Image (cartoon, rainbow, N blue to C red; front, side, top):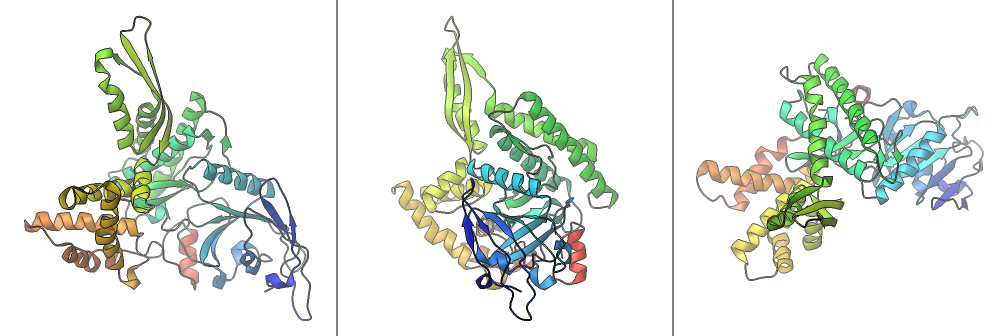
Length: 452
């Protein structure tokens, strides 16, 4: 394998930060040139990219280069690999599609939309016989994320399915607010992270997406119809394989994304009219949006010509209301529902223990006396089960149920130990990396499943 030291680097500026152009590597006696003439476009270049076997078709990569993580169903060959201390997803596709998707993902990240992070586009791949290989798009693996087929271990329950679809609807609303037309909405093109009993959804495939200053109602409705049809098809596949509860109706369930989307879109964007005496409804509308996880950055308030009615319409809404407050107070970066749950405990802690302290100081004490002790109590061998914020949320829930069942206030230390022994230890690793994946494991992953 050729290392970075054996290639001449020529940095060429592009309209997207920088591109590293790698000429044909110097060949030493007895060494096969495995770099060829690679062209790597990346926002920040990681020389470790050169250590991967780009001269081999992706589906034939040696298993020692691969990380066996659950993969969704894709029309392309997709593999996971290590890049330094992180993981990357690699997808073979055409050069045009790879570059278009790379730039689109960068734009979405700048718009603060939940999506995977692009790493690089690599072209100029050739095998040792000089035959061209497909270009690849490289993205950063989203830690603790799962494709929908890996969320469940045996049978997908209706309640879990409902939460997945609601998360998908919220993602679609956020994309449409940003002016993004997806064009291929599906569960398969989405990754999910656990979020305090619900799920947070992330866009993982922007191949068909387009960005506009604003979407028309027709564009939004067409995207929504694509979502309904694709989700119905995915659920039919699961039903045929006996992977969802028999009571689940794929067609009726797929309609949920339309209902969930429209309710949320209306709450975020529709105009509301009320009498002058009901001006309290301005604050009530803002509070409802906050409860949904959105901040209101701009409102339009007007009165009717006769002055009897007030018309209110949110103009600029921004997702992440609870995330931002938790991050400001504690420095903890969590999903929206996790942040909501942790803030509830933080506020309760302050009211019970330190009502005289200001919010920032009380939050610091909560982190050092509640959050950090729970995280530090997780045994090393269980550290890859769930992300820290989800563990703390589940411990708080577990303590509440223990207290209710035993009719006493269960000490935190007792609840933590019970949770570690009886719940977390029996969860599967959601950040697990099987670096020496055997053939059977890779076949399971190719089918869209997850190793048990």
